[in-house]
Length: 310
Ligand code: KMH
Ligand code: ZN
Image (cartoon, rainbow, N blue to C red; front, side):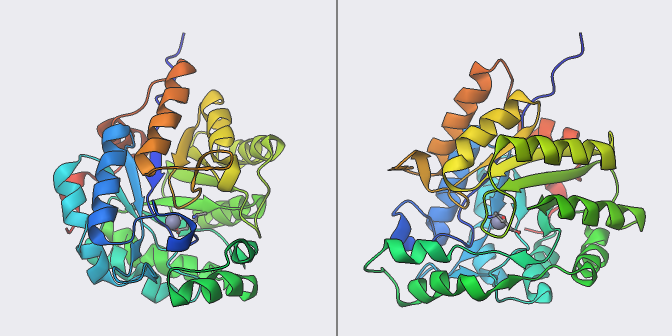
């Protein structure tokens, strides 16, 4: 019987959706981002998806100097694959968003596969007081943002970053994004095996129902055959249930405070490692094995942790 592939756990440490008021656990100083990332790797995450934050007030940052304050520390303390976001915040240009990846030449970075509404404005109504001045408007105004990822933007990212041999985490929030990705492969932008992150439950993208996961997976099978590896990210309360379904189906999983602040319905996670430990337990209870960072490198065809610029 063929061996079941191991399951890669990605942990997305802090992101650009949640704000400090929403959870004391959300890291934003370099110390907290580094220590939570290291603990997540020790708990079983083989890929760490990282954004930077302003250390004084937790605002979303794409300043390469803010990344520089934690990247070497994570690299020295773990063997994990470090994956830099190119999502930035919703107001940055694509050139600004790829500046950190260009400077640090990581093994992986995210690449969002279509323009869309990307909103979390309903969260603004849940809090009466905010820790920092910027938070309320940032959250409330997300109802007017367009998360811009045109074909030209995607082409620019590919041509700028491909010489760095960075593997992309292709973030697909709806089924049309899979067709965008197929088109980009047909014009030679990306080499197999590609790595697709199926994303469910972002307001503006496809919803977090299991039917949708099956539909996305079946569509990707048809479009990419054996040329892709896949992972699932459920936003908010859908995080663990969709990760469990993905692991059952032979896929990989992404957890982390970037996408959900909870450890169980209505209960905040203490930190990123707690979510990683929980999903690891679930994966192992299902009879699957968690991939080490080197196994993840092999499965995804990565260039290696010794070829980054940090
Ligand atoms: N938080 C995810 C739903 C990126 O960093 O490029 C989106 C994300 C985008 O991870
Ligand atoms: Zn991200």
